[in-house]
Length: 123
Picture 1 (cartoon, helix red, strand yellow):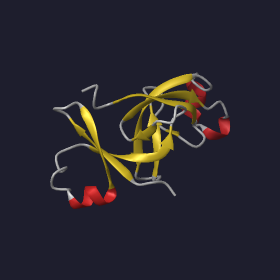
Picture 2: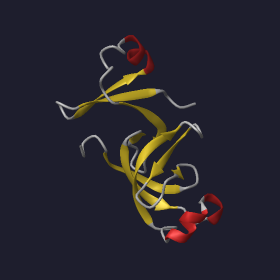
Picture 3: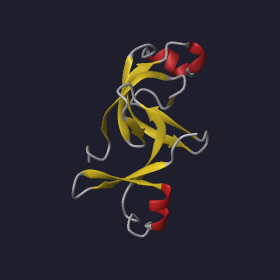
Picture 4: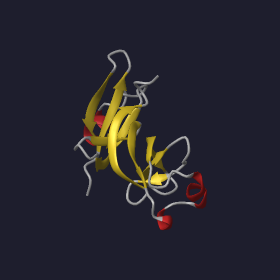
C-alpha cells in the first residue's frame, strides 16, 4: 500500500510544501488556493518521489502489447520521451503524457523514469 502524501506549490517562494493527508484535511482552508499534487507511490530511478505535475524522462515501451495503435505508428517506441505526470479519473491511475503520446502508464508503458522538473516551475 502506498503512502498518501501531498505537496503544495508556494509560488512566491518557488518551492513545495509537503504534507500528509491529515495535515491537508485539517488545514484545507490554508491550502485552498494552492495547486495540490499527490504522491504517485512511485520513485524514479534515483529514488526521488514522483508527484502529479512532475516532468519526467524515460524510455517508452517497445512492447506492442502495452501501447496503443497510434503510438506504434509514432516512431517513439523504445525511445526516450519526456512528459508530465497526471492522474486519470477514468482509469484511477497515474500516467505520463507527452507531446507525442497522450497516455503512458507507469507499470508497462514507460521505464527508467527520472524526475527532471515540474510544471509549476515552468510557469
